[in-house]
Length: 170
Image (cartoon, rainbow, N blue to C red; front, side):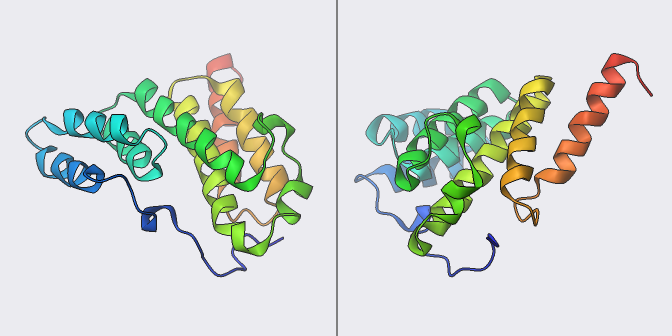
């Protein structure tokens, strides 16, 4: 299945949120430069802990603050929110190509979101030097996405090279 050959439907950022959440995210964006963004984002999270808008905002905030563990927590939570939407297995390691090819067309946007979120989990783990885990994630994504629409092949090559560098193999 070509992960680009579909019409986008049900984009997470178009979904309505609990009252006040969008305003808190906007306030966080306004206050990023002066260092007061986190409190607004955490308030939004407490109002809507399953909101992908909030989880993506938290991920971005923590990533740009170089707080990779917190970014990984937010991204992992987003993965857990998306997974039941597409009826994927609890563990990404159990994901098979049939899970994707068997997904109804109207859910392909969520499938792509899941795969890109899993890629983000792999990337954050790579940045945290958890190279075996990130390699396993990228290998899974390459297995699932033969046309590399998600872009995991290049990251897989980077993590393999990094592992070789760390291991002293040239």
